[in-house]
Length: 165
Image (cartoon, rainbow, N blue to C red):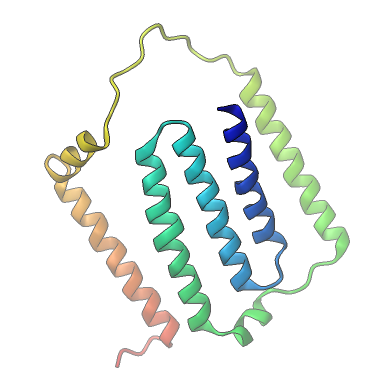
């Protein structure tokens, strides 16, 4: 089980590194998808199939496709202006600061005492969550869907230049 976890974590880390280090924006988006897939595999390995399925569908599918489509609509000429080349010293300073934050968060996580619990809570199945979303929480669920639709329409209008035809 641990071997699978480390293998899937390696896939996620390779995707994240490829995304950050790639000079091509389309390749960066594809590496982002690889990182999302690695995270979904970790969820499946941890026996959280609902989270894994949501990760695959929402992030690896919808968000990644939306990012790629936005990149394609904006065009490469606009992208090169917005991404100035950083000097090597600035990259090392950024990597050092990120490493320091990572170490501090790791220390805080390991030194914080965790509460002990003798009994685990009730297991929540995906079907139970679906029943709750479509019965008790139907209104907030639909409002979130309308908000996402409005955001997508706004993004399309911005990509076209703001003029509806």
